[in-house]
Length: 426
Picture 1 (tube, rainbow, N blue to C red):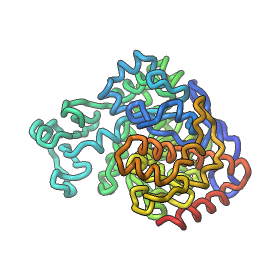
Picture 2: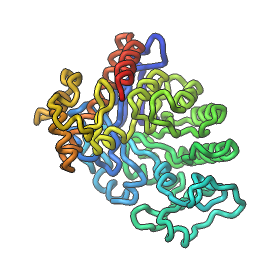
Picture 3: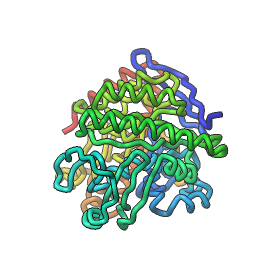
Picture 4: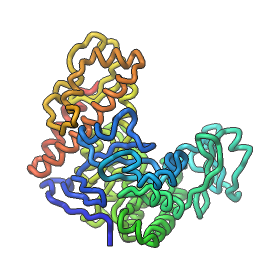
């Protein structure tokens, strides 16, 4: 018996977009839905209650970071991720694989993953993967992969740790998220076809082990759902093979991973989305790390149901915000004396209100000059306002897309948004 069910309620007439209800152990998620990233059980600068007021339905946390601090045992003792962070709703955790690989500054294994210390692509070697204390101490971060799992050093203190598919599942069971992901090997887009195929096959084996470990825990499998992730790098044939393989394994859902450029119209997203044609049409799909507005709409059109990305809060902390006419950078000199609201076209957004009256229209009503002053001065309120505005913007965009699917006008909605947002950006 699965801990998750997915019902498709409406489909767009001229694309693969669909609106549905994803039912989890901690409540429903109306899809398509954007899931804010709370890496360490917090969305930076925003209270959980404020997330709900902005329209968030679920929150995603990071297995790697919570494993290192405070440790999964503490989160479990608190009653699980949702109770630990005082969030009243569904939660999601990733496998930790992306961070294990991406936070490694040097690699020493049978096939180098990203690059050498000098920054050039490494050649294949036949040496056995071993932990090299000299390299680890010299460079601070290290990841070593073998067929059983990954040994890595903490980015916090350089201590040595190891993740296997079974260990990742064990940690995520303790964290207690409603949806979690199987452990996979996150490859660099610069890797060769031969290595991408090798990593894909290893990911498939790890997926099987993750699924087995999950099913052996009778309590967890009735409360938590597990999604599988396909690999294949930038190669379409490998992606299709991987998608078919993961789809046939019996996962509760599919994680669309990969490395995507963030500039609309110049990325590999379209190629990655082609994988979805290999899935059962009723399988829920989560787009990992997809946060660019145009990419979100393109993904919805292809049948993606959930999204997560750190971009809204990350760019917000640096003083940049989304508007209906494109992204703007409040540190620009022209905004010092611009007393117009952050985004006049967001003022009429109908969003739920918290007990303190927080709404998207309230956040967007701050003047550009005021928030630019806060950002320039390094005041934390500036970063908070920008982050909240950006999250509200993306959450509302996806909510409007859902409404447009029900109304049979999603394609027109997408075209209008892209024309306005990107046509006036710059």
